[in-house]
Length: 298
Length: 320
Image (cartoon, rainbow over all chains, first blue to last red; front, top):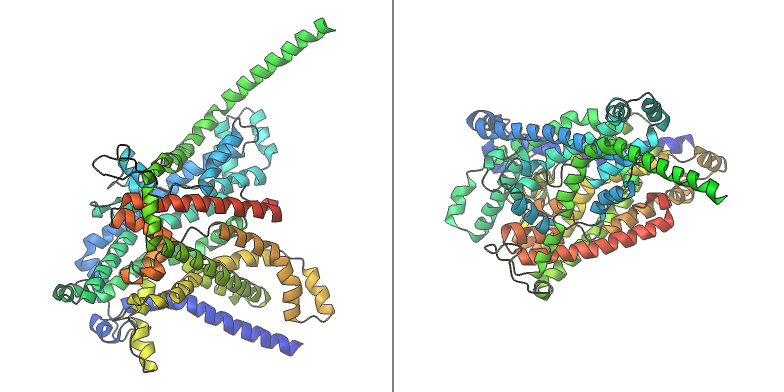
């Protein structure tokens, strides 16, 4: 029995090490390619160990072309910070209100939020509305508002936390003491709901950091508003154009192919991943909690 | 009697009215605080709804949404007359089916394995397999490109030469993409599923396993006769909810990983990418809107039916 147990444990760990490697190796390839010399990349392609280690790609990004990359990086940070702050300011009070037992029209308002989860007009009507009515094309708002600001899941998740995890006696006691509703929310309910607020803040933050769809759809001329993901997306689109032209065998494509550097592309992708990896250990606990909360609820 | 009760009745009525008024007043600040969120949902999810009607017009940018001429079901007729309608429907449903099966089986396997293993390194495994879930689909596109690029990809430059095989032009051979996309999706999604199943597993009563062990049940038997039956409600529920979303594809995955290559559309085009290309790249708004309406309606019916089924299985897990 003991022997069988050890064998199981050993093979189990071996299997998990393989799976872990599969999960992480693409990132290793990304980082090592970004640290490789361009001519080596052209000769040997992307490799797990840089054949000719070089910081050229990063020099190119941060010294030669710093204006573009630093700007995009800053935009990513600004957008994520603004997004999380605004999202929590919008989500928390709505969830708190919906959690109030005796709120008039509570059922209607809950359904109003809930319905957005089961029916969606789709991309075209949403686009026509934001562009036609609100004119957010080529503005910062286009990155901040559509689909990202909050969503029904976050609101309902937070609502159920307010409703079930905060003892109503505490809120009632505060009311008897004459505290106003605003004060009760800000000074009693919100501090008690910190765990769920942190969890949702992390999800929102990751969504903002990773988003490229809004910019792709709504930013046509204002490339100065591009975040790092949008820059990556644009370069990806250019690779596509190049490949399509290379397939046609045009002369121009050969000249163009030299322009976006093979290593630089990967170095930029590294920059897009690094902040996530850096905050990951700190947010993991909350992130996992959010998955189990949300996963079980769909 | 009548004379005696009527004043109290009206009294009760007026106090109820006063109470309601006080109640109303008390809730005004709460309504005000809720307003920004409600306005967002109105703007983001409700205001676009009339725009669905664009699908029934021949969109003309010069005339705008509200003055383009009505054409009835013409856009739908055109859409369903093309091969595209069949291809995008087939791809969306088949890919999602494959994703559900592959990811569920793998996630349960990994979760059970993790729950049985000893040692602190378990936490590291879990963190590692969850990491791909946090990365944007653009970056996943780059990661895939690192392996698959025809000129500089790892597979063509290092792996295939090992076997003396000729390089493969990955981004122009559509029949390879079902496997690639199913693999990439599993790579990205298994960590997420593992966490859900692991959380469910750790909640099981250990007494079941202890008594099974006393009876000499093997690990395999314990898995088949204890773990799996206990997991069944969670599996059924998550699968039903996923089936409810089977008409919605993961846009980022299908747009970024195949790099928007036209040569691959037969096996990579899904409803979401079709709608997007129609709107942004081709400017064919009417057709794109028709495909969007098709998705919204069928998707809505599926979500509703799935939730009705979930409610039968486990009322607490249903959305409705």
